[in-house]
Length: 232
Image (cartoon, rainbow, N blue to C red):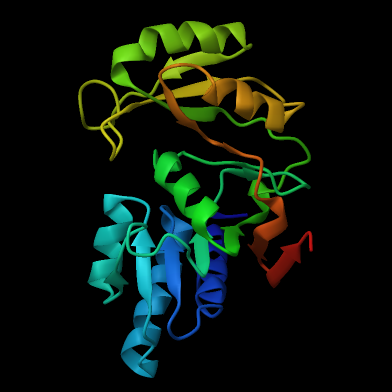
């Protein structure tokens, strides 16, 4: 898929997801380029249709984009249960287990995913895989980054502290933590690996999403349009 085709596919699935939002909903808003097309379309619906919704953003970036397009913002304190969440993924396997976190928003994204009754994952075909094998981001307490790295190595990872772009030093998440990217190669048991990683003292959250397949709907966009996939 060419870069232009990829952008078109992202726009297509983002807009398709936005059409699933109904008046009065509280919607989780993920972070990333595909979700930003959904936010843009929601803004159009707010302006043209009078759509009334509230959004729970998963990052400062998502919050700024939502404000730009007129989406009223709220949080999980006010709305601990969400009608819907729209998000992307780095990889999706056949059981709709995910790798997420390339945008370093994995902690808030998992909180929103857990709080939502239904989750729409918007992706292009390159994100659909038979087995998860992308590097797994891990959000860690800076104080414990060294000890966490050693524990992750013991689990079979090649851990790399994520460095900033146009910034000296490590990436700092919206929560004030570091990101360690962990290459495990093909992940044979994502459920077990997720549990092992989040049990390490100093790990705040990891980018494996193994528990939400039954409430995930994947909207897959390619040159032929959108396909809607569900395990239900």
